[in-house]
Image (cartoon, rainbow, N blue to C red; front, side, top):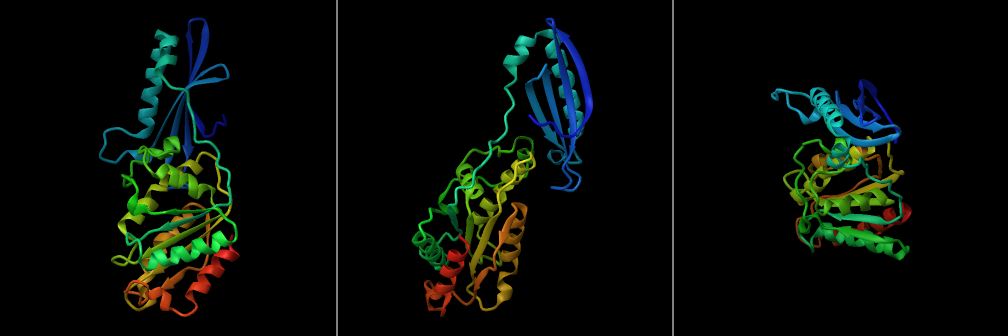
Length: 289
């Protein structure tokens, strides 16, 4: 298990004829979030890690009477006392540490149909993209956020301690699919100048995948394509949508393709009346498989 960060506490504990170490490391995660520090507490018996606990500075608001380093050091003192009292009970009381396993890209194409309208213009764009990939023999996975169990992100930042979200719902499979895909296509209408609520909830929950990457993992280069429709005329209607997706792609290291932005499509099937649009969508997908 790779150890990172500066050791700020290293205590030897003798118990039952065995020497144990209780270590606290401080890791600077400012490259991911300004000023974020992560503290990792570990109990060792020789080369074996018996237990592990993490906490980070983003979990605690300034109004709280304690902070991350204090929590880690107080937990360390408690572990030292537990080991001195009974190492066997300590082992039983603390689960073995684990981190998310590596993900292998499998070449699938993931399409997120971000509109709650199953037969709307976004759905038509998604169907064109899916058909283009399918004709090239690629595996397709279409995700419908509004039909899935996706708990909104609550900004607890505990995923930066474990690499996984505290909520166990449909996002687990969605994150796994996107992490493995070769091309990610996001289809979205413009709702109040941004993406629909269901799609936004899905995007926010990808914080867990970003957190997983802080443990030294990395995702192979993937491409991302945004296709958005707006009822009103004018490209300025897409300003918020394009920025939301740009930041999403950037956080996950996804290479963005030139987006497809179609305005003045207020009626279902309006996109089918835009000359050359279907061919353009199919071409973009084929060329980036």
